[in-house]
Length: 364
View 1: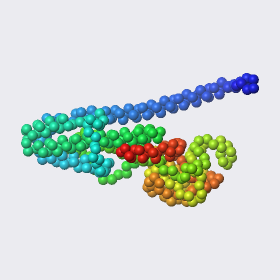
View 2: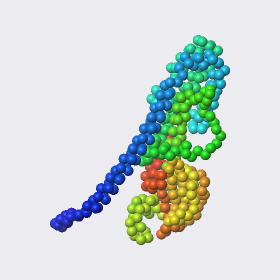
View 3: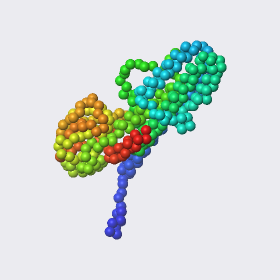
């Protein structure tokens, strides 16, 4: 280093150099392992998706469907009723009111099959061979067309939601890795079969996969902090390293501090379930909200609680009041966002999420 015309040297011993090299190698290996795991996960998901699409290409041909019709019209009618029930269950559970502008084949994704030509051949062959079953064949064609349009709609919604999550700096595939199936808690068994012997037409199976992905992504987006837990104009301490207010030493601050008067309301930053409400060392009176998929928010130094463990909340619900309990020098809210128990900076979410959420809802 050159200082006032003099050159000074800093020397590192061989031991320090070896330690530094070891740390660099360790970090590099850890990074490679992480990237490899993410690549494998994405590869597996893509492989499964392509396998499902491949099965779609092998659905029943017009000739085989005519054989089914010849074997028994009553059996075909029962199968179509079962399929219709499946469609209604899927719509009620995942979509609600069906939009008027479901995407057609030419506007959908290439990954979704188009059975319209084969369905028309089925109608023609059934009409020629079994005229009394023409109505059933037309009903089947309408069902298949509707299922494929619903699948395209779910894929488009999922892609739009995934893009919104990326704009917030998060990986949608990483959020899906810890998604909803782990949260299932039981209930009545409803078979998703559409054919006899419990079989499931691959086009209907494809619809179920697409709707499940759409739902999981939308839940992930809804769980990302989007409401300011307190007045953002009075942030007294940011995320990262700072001088500790008690001893002046360098310390890591895992959240944001919102200064405010004792008793001022604290709001839930996103939809979720209160997983903890009580005292925590250093945090004083504290509430934690589980938003699913490994995402959690923490609200500390409260003067009182307005929510309890197990309670479901939505973004903007009052869950407590600002205080100075725990390791605190004055009334404020300490707010943390954690993903898989790793603290991340809350500010980007709070600043970007409301705009992203609004844009996503408007374009849904």
